[in-house]
Image (cartoon, rainbow, N blue to C red; front, side, top):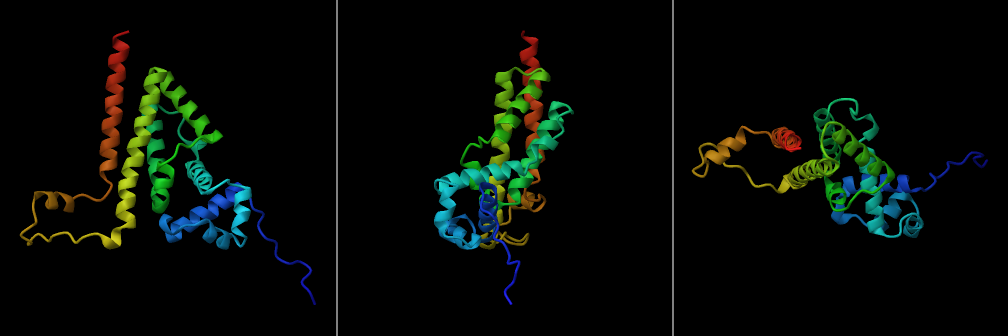
Length: 215
């Protein structure tokens, strides 16, 4: 007897396609990703994807937007002071991207212009303006923080993706073991992120104070 309730296929839409594409990139890496493999993962003809994304670059735009949405920007501490807000944003961006090391270059290589990203950027400038920054200086601060965070994550992603090819560190009894190697042994990968972020925020605060003093 035929099944009266056969399983239904998930309806394709932009978010679902981007989600499956991101999962596939996580599994096989960006270099091995293709629209053909995405079609196979979706269980559809690859041409079906092109009804939702004009080309692979447009799909990558969709993946970048998906990654931004996973920051859940609405839940950032908007009611707290500007330093807490900027710190939370950078930490959340870092954590989200480190969860997808193979896709970091997708996010880093294009602007995210989704309505959510634009609204968040505007809201960030407003928060910094309300804290005493000029809008122009606030934009510079936001850009610096974003670029610092993404640059840091790109470095960490390279280490993560290429871990199996990383060269062996010299042991303390190795003749090539030097002060640099000793310092590296005492530092966990990525722990300098907070050091850099704190230094940047301190610098922004001091520069903003000098600007206000000259008015």
